[in-house]
Image (cartoon, rainbow, N blue to C red; front, top):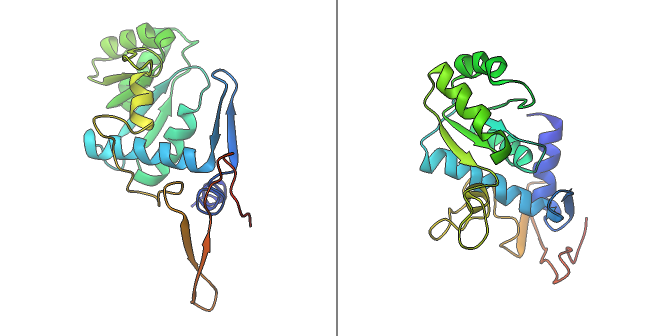
Length: 196
């Protein structure tokens, strides 16, 4: 496993309340625990709800956003291949890529939805489109946000990683093989009460 990926998963487990990402466009802040939970939920959605497996292709066509982080780590958990399309290109430039890669699901921003629909149509590829910022429900969240925030009909329980922010007790193994436990509750400020 890539060193950056190992460090990310280490951070999810050991410092789940530490801020990891500030999304400038939305003004939201995400902790490592938040990102781990989002990747978990996206992985669960792709595998359990949509039946994808290792080697299947999922596409992203959007401006920069945290969905790229979610998708990257979900792909590490599942073996699903993530491909991104530069939607600044014209649809006739992207269509050959779509035809070769044949994504089963594409996460698209509303700004780039028409380009992706044209590409899929001209390539003859059947693909489910999931809106990253459109298809807003009554609560003001997009279809993608409903997936990664875990409130789709009761929520999809994360199953790939430990649910880092939902438990207050953490256990690991020492070099001698003994179990070492420590408490890591998150405080109301969103910071871990103990750090390592």
